[in-house]
Image (tube, rainbow over all chains, first blue to last red; front, side, top):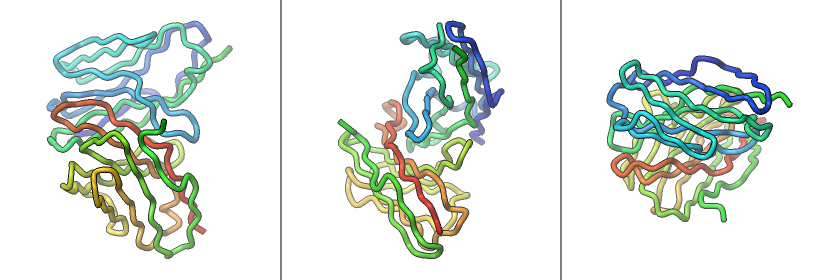
Length: 113
Length: 114
């Protein structure tokens, strides 16, 4: 199957601290992983992605780590800001070649000023 | 400029009355998706098209249908909406699995069933 899960439903951090959001998946054939941010009333917004031939990818203030051995994905946000408050989802392409994209359950990030 | 456009943003329909939600894209992407998202839950994939090939999820109710008349447009038809179908419906597009690429989402249509 292509189950995707998140470890924590809510993460609360102090402004300026680093945030780490985790995701576990079950399908070892998955080759493409994406993190999305969703603000209230809006569609999910792309943050960063990573392919299975990589174990780390960095963007602006964000880093995604992929551990294929334990099927674990994490999103690290440096110097978390109030504007980072949102729900974060990991998503992955399924094992088919049709572009199927499934989502994990989401972590709500709350940033305290 | 919006690349994935969903209309309307808010839709109110009566119980049992057929309703159609629309999605259009300017990205010329191969794949178009429809997701259902209820409060405090992840988007749940209903179905997706790879070009003209329709891929239905096993647990998508028969009440939900989709049409993709051309590359740019995709419709979600709910034949007999029930109260449990009230949700946010999200349309997305991507280049597809082969070339990868993230999915781009519209702003969603919030469906209310009365």
